[in-house]
Length: 421
Length: 106
Image 1 (cartoon, rainbow over the protein chains, first blue to last red):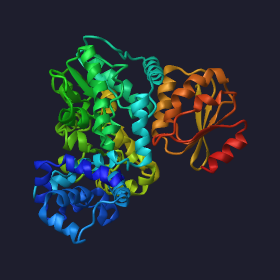
Image 2 (cartoon, rainbow over the protein chains, first blue to last red):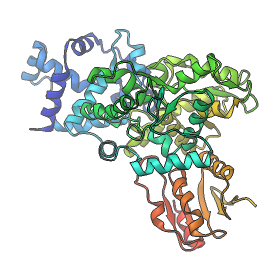
Image 3 (cartoon, each protein chain N blue to C red):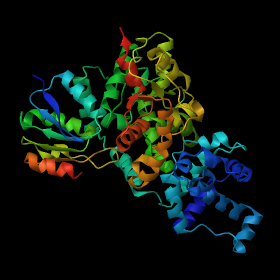
Image 4 (cartoon, each protein chain N blue to C red):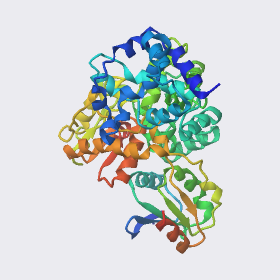
């Protein structure tokens, strides 16, 4: 079977009343383009979100509508070809972080992010995924981590952090209340985040644990749109949570993982009843509000303006908008300033959705980040805080690429360094 | 005496000279430096032994910027790390001159 036929079959299979209604509702007004940081950053009209779902639209119209069948028969519209898959693979994987800002501006209320995810599913089934991204997916499938956090590496890393940061990192504790699951970026690139989060959890008196079986929260299957692997990777965390008997799973500073586990998993698999999935941003807010941890007021008021970057999957999708602001208003009441736009209207960093894992996507990733540079420079911020390690990797890489004089800080790190008592 | 010192070599390159056993505080300080630093690194092990620094170099490897290492006999396999989007190239050289030449070309 041709690849294109596999993709079309997937699109047709995915298409039910919801997708049909979304596609029929589109008036081609183009407002979604203005919301897309890749379109804004490059001016490439092919990056308009509505164009990113073109293959899905064609498959739907040509299979399910009379006008679509006529257009195809008369040669007024083309069937999906293998060359189309290659072309849209670049559009949908290189130039989309699935941030879903486009859906915020659509006057018809079309939820474009999930539609683009459906296109990715078709491309994944047709094996039309960028090689770099697929290699990471395969590593997660076979080694347990897209970044090489094998059993041995995880053990060494945890021991090193516990030893050198002189912090207790409980492992595989049955009966703990909270299972903390880190992302591999934190484990490998930002290990100080492990120590910071451990310090906070211990200071709050939380009964918590990490798991050797459910050690990786990132879900590269979700990035790729491979539903079978998305379920497999989410299952590793849920199975560990059930085995340890925890009440909640806390996703650390990772946005897509939070979306996959908290919001999307239930669409694909039975999620364990009675186990809450939450994010570190929400937990930090809860700890501060309840007085379980105390922060030094004004701890960062002497370091210049500090701002907060809203991560698409944690703030816009996950609604943890207020907690980081409450915290920063304690830590830097005089220096904390908002970028514009912000909160649920914030501009994505450009590195999420697997984009940063694709080397050939670097030019568009950097182009999209230029919007962020303008935002930060407009308020003269010296420090940009965030609660997503993928955003943080994009920021630290872009700070080097563009030679920017900014500090890039994780929210948990700021909190840990300002703990009192 | 500190277990490492950071000094400039030339624009865009700093020398990190490892001079003895790390304390916990020094490991944390070096981790912070590697997180903040945006340039290339010349890692000079002339003040220490290969055995002493092997464990730490292996743990610091994923956090390193583009770096050239020289000055003590280390097993180059401790620098091996699967290529990934978050990693930077790090290589071991027998001499400082070789290390610096390679670093300048990165």
